[in-house]
Length: 202
Image (cartoon, rainbow, N blue to C red; front, side, top):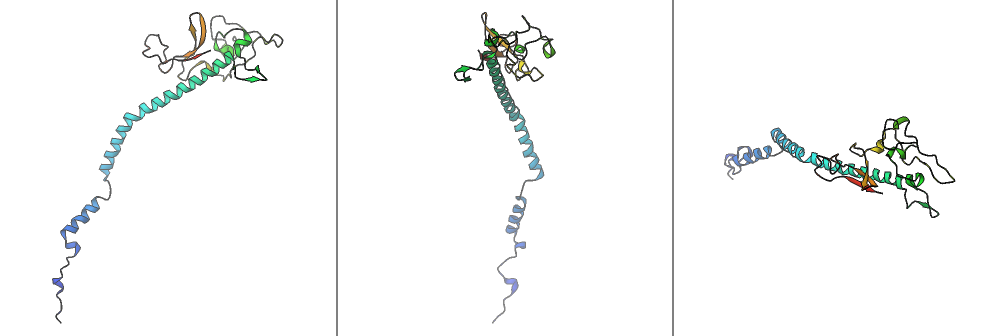
């Protein structure tokens, strides 16, 4: 039996086959991104985030401040007018400043103190500033507060943007509270382009 010549083998070693060698090279290159490609991708993502993230954050912040302002104004309204739904044995227990004193507050600090000439309040000026009468349990009349919690910073006087609240006036009547909202300007003031005021009626 004749011996086969190894050099006549029909199989070609892989290292000598140009087609397979090309496939191996292509696979090696396709294993991942190069550093340059990664830098390009990161740069593109950075540009996209720079355009889209700040407006989104601004909208979220504005919405949360609107909510906080609305909630605080509701608390102030209840402190002034009472909370009709809070009753014990059918009796109104959270009556508020107006029913106790017999008038609306002339300034929001009257919800926190009956003597606005001392401490935090002495430098705050407003029309009709006066000490309020003590509570008379027999007449059920007089200042029976505090109607709001004083934090020592008078923060209840300001909305979430730092602008002071003011009473909402309709004709000659005080009908609620209002905040100038995100733009810091009450509607009708010079420079106010949109009516974004936040209002709470009594």
